[in-house]
Structure formats: C-alpha cells, structure tokens
Image: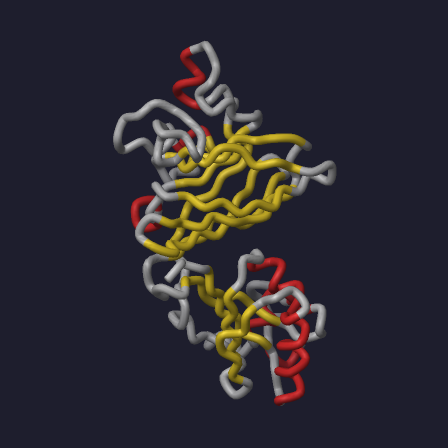
Length: 260
C-alpha cells in the first residue's frame, strides 16, 4: 500500500445535514472522507491537498474546524511534528509527518518573505536564545557535503528551496526519504535569506550551507499529535471550545465561554 497522508479535524458539526454539507464541499476537490462522526465532531480525510487547503474547504461551509492529528493510511503513529516559524516579520507554520519509514512529508505556509527562493534546512540545535544564529549548522549526522533534497550526497537537514510569491507567501509540500521525524524533534527549522545553490557553487560556503546566507526566521521542531492522539474539544480550565480559542485572548477575564 502506498503511504498517503491522512488528517484528523475537529469540526463544529451539530447535525447530519452539517456533515453532508462538509462532505459535499470536500468532494469538489476529490478529498476522500475516511471517517465522519457528528456525535464526536470528528472528520478524517485522505488527500494530497495541504492541511490549510482542506481547512479552508471546511470553513468555507461556515463550519469551524481545527487540525487535531496527522498520520498516514499505513500507520497513525510513525511520528508527527510542527514548527512555528518566526523572525524579521516572517511567520508561518510547518508540519512534518512520517508517512512510512522512508517517506516524510514536510508542508507549510510562511508569510513575510521577500519574493523568490529561500533555503530551508533542519539545523542541529533547538536553541533560539540568539535567534537563528544559535541554531547551529545543518543537521548532518553522517558528515556529508551539502546538497539539495534530491542530491545523492546531502545533509539530512537539506530541504532545498522554497519559493515566495510577490505577496511574500510561500506554500510548499515536500516529500523526503532521509528525514525521520523522531531524529529531528527538538532541533530547529530555519528559513534562509537567499537561494540555496544546493552545493553547486565553487566556494567553500557552497559545501557548508549553499551560500544561502543567514537564517531570517526559524522555529523549534516539536512533537505533535498523530491520528486519534488528541481528544481535546474544550479547554478544561475555562470551557472555551477548541475552535474558539483563536478568537479570544490567551488569558484574562475575556477568555470565558460566556463571552463568546
């Protein structure tokens, strides 16, 4: 069986007609609905679309939704991670899921970049005490030369380039055979100032970092939930529903269910 990504969403569905509306919206983009449970407000889909694209399809129906878990049709527990990227007016979220032992999906959306290509790499340290400067070198456990994501010789952390559009947004989806989620949790993901030459340059920096310049935004790679590993629907401290959390302050008197 080919490994394909599966995503679990909590969806604010109250009745069967709500579920039908969501299901019909997903069919327009050939998203396979694997499970839909109104009582549990649970939706599991299989798709090559990004989680943000699917989230948009769901919420365009008027139903609020939150990504709860990521896995594959082979296994729900091979490992998943997330990195919240920030720095220099750049921000975004990158999600990483192990689809199979030699198949890792890296997908994300990052805003605030200058238009064009930017190197993307896993670095060895999850240390942001001095911004991206304290993240260390590329993750390179085998002491290989620098390359691109498809190069025969490369650092494990070499993910090539992402491209930002004129509006500064880069949305990307990469498949990699060398990264394993459990090896990179606790490390960092770094977006660089310039295009990575993938080791093709003539100077020494090309073999180290592809002449991609300093890191301009980064985030620590943290473990995230696989499929069915996160049952949260309400914040136990104040009763705020999961899909309302982004609309209220993190703390304070205004963060109550009664105020929503």
